Image 1: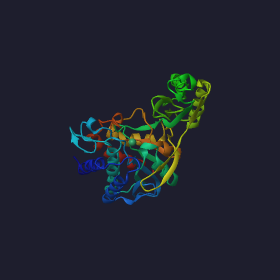
Image 2 (image 1 turned 180 degrees about the horizontal axis):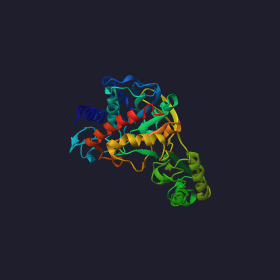
Image 3 (image 1 turned 135 degrees about the horizontal axis):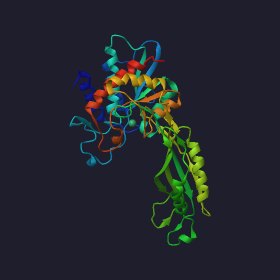
Image 4 (image 1 turned 45 degrees about the horizontal axis):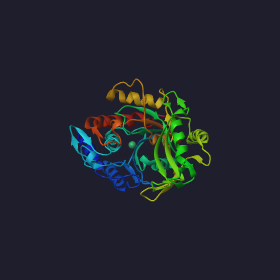
Length: 388
Ligand SMILES: [Zn+2]
């Protein structure tokens, strides 16, 4: 084990042992800040939203940024985990725990991989920034905040990709179907208007919706997820139902497009006395520093062309480490890359860990992949900083 792999793994373990659901990332942010400072990063700061940034100074050509996030998803029932979710334990040469792949393993590999540039005889042609943002898991408050005030021509998104390059993903919108009827005692259903009658039609016809298509990312999709009613009594027909729908977009389609399409279906499913509306809910979120944001629960889609110049530079830089990359794939899930892309930045994905393990009780990353990611991140920083 090289000395910095050893320290990188130790840092990833300390990150996993530091809990931080969205909105509660202060301890993780301070840990990342202190690690960057100890490693010799310049201008290490925590910004107004609670994001952490640090810089490896380079020449006056274009800067770039490496990006991951500070938060993680809930661990659920601890008993379901083969190893403690906040243990950061190592078994069979793999690091286990919540965040091992999403995203504390990749975060540690970015912080340590890019820090290798401090040992180079020549500084990079442009500044290399490393950042870890808040609330990625609930819509990207931190990334949106950062994209408003800073611009980087190229951003490396460290979400897990088994150390392969990624060039985009579908976007996401949360849509809520709100159906109203007329509430009555459940013993006389014929006197009321049940919103379930509308809901049943909507659910059965959702798969008929014609979905937008895109060559690289396939089709958009929609999936009903959560359901709520205005009732807590099981002997009353509710007056209102809310059904959350998770809509995944291909590039070019927006939440408003989805809303229009869904509303047309709702209009066709109405029964007499009922109403149905497709809503894009606005939520208000506060970060641990007190910054607040009102926003839709959406992530934009993005896709880079396979022959994009920055992607070609990344391919060549990684070839000595991971071998030739014939075709660059996409992620199944949305990332903060959507927000940075929407602000005009070129986002390239590269991170250790199997993305299929993210958000599961089997989350773990082979140490070997962290080692490759250290090499890969250092190579990407040397090749892409200032490569305009
Ligand atoms: Zn993530």
